[in-house]
Image (tube, rainbow, N blue to C red; front, side):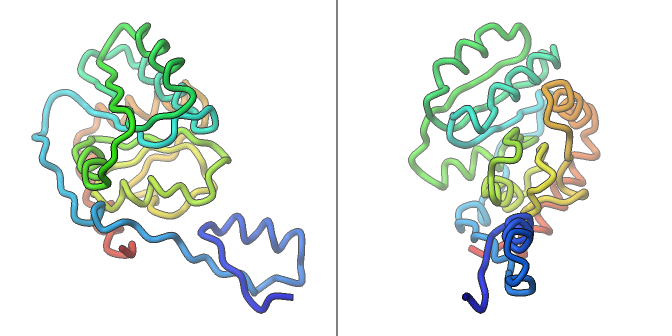
Length: 208
């Protein structure tokens, strides 16, 4: 009986209208806004030989952070590091998994209280990684990473806010596919610079 409804994701509108065809043409995509701290954050970390990957979010099984750690391990690179921001029920398991990784460095920052501190960590990353697959509705962290001007690697083709072919690399959801994507971005500094610029351009359309 509604005249209109909204969702932050186009695929959710499609699911609703598929189930209720009478709602066709009544759905509108209205993305959630990005906090101003992400829009104003700029990179402070100097460009280094080490490539820093950052993941941020709740450490629950649905976020598949274990896939990121396993993909990082497959790199077998000492010139890479992974920073994991967040807390949750999978923390201890993920720490044990990370302890067995033989190359590179993995850092767990835990829960970070200040939004500005999270934004700075993301802005200082070389690549933001999201391994969530067919779980998130919008994937707010993608828009937040774009707002900081950070290149993105993700694997969920249904997510569209904050990502596009110019600023993000879409891979398959498997560990091997994520690892291949991470390696490609590690070895292509020029592409990362172009993606960072594209994220900054895209950020201008994200509301605070």
